Image 1 (cartoon, rainbow, N blue to C red):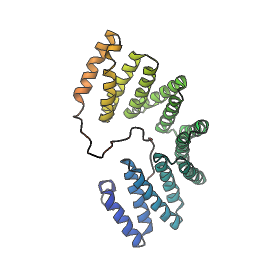
Image 2 (cartoon, rainbow, N blue to C red):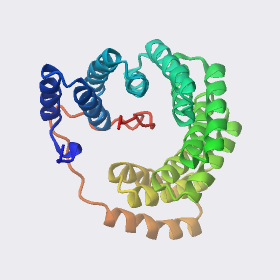
Image 3 (tube, rainbow, N blue to C red):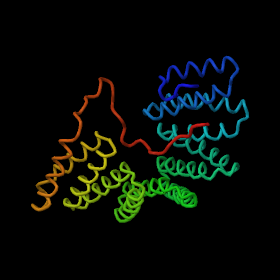
Image 4 (cartoon, one colour):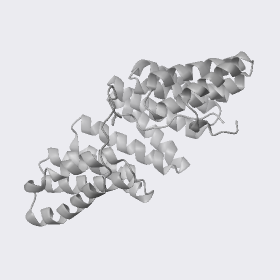
Length: 288
């Protein structure tokens, strides 16, 4: 297709996919269903994405296209995680991981292992999740996938936050922050600093919390994640009377600059619940 598929309306792509399947062009149909599934994932329409991945998977199985089956199986697992269908996600991702291993696709294997960690956490199996995280991290290190390494360590830290193990949480999140800084991932830096701010706040260190929130807001702004930048800078502003005067003076100027720079807040349309900040941050795969 000469037109960039991301520029098309998902309904148009679904129509083209159905036409291709009807015409017997199953390979094109499978690719289109997978592509529109990825688009729905990017806008948090997980039920629709799940349906599209199922359609794509069914066709790839008919074609006996192992690569297509494997990639789409993984995508389906990601959608199931976001739908909180934990048991189904684990079953789907286990199959995808075995297929990636069979084809010596180390990157896919690590991604599936990472997905299994997140699904296991959702299921409440903390120790199992930690085992999957460590295996994924090991493969990402071999592949020198710094983004993957940072994401895994960050999620391990977040898991320890949920367990209220502040020491291990802080250690992991600081390790992730170091990697995010090295690869200049502004959104990752911001997420790590925001979580460190939460931990400092819980521990009663309001000065450190305010400093982390301000730097997080700066990075969210630079990453053009304006809604979260606004929330985090407001949290920092609320702490201004809980910090030493010298800190207040130093941070006040930065806070004002961020607030002045943020675009005007857009009211969500009726029936729009907005973006879920807790959406799991790992990607689906596009079949080439």
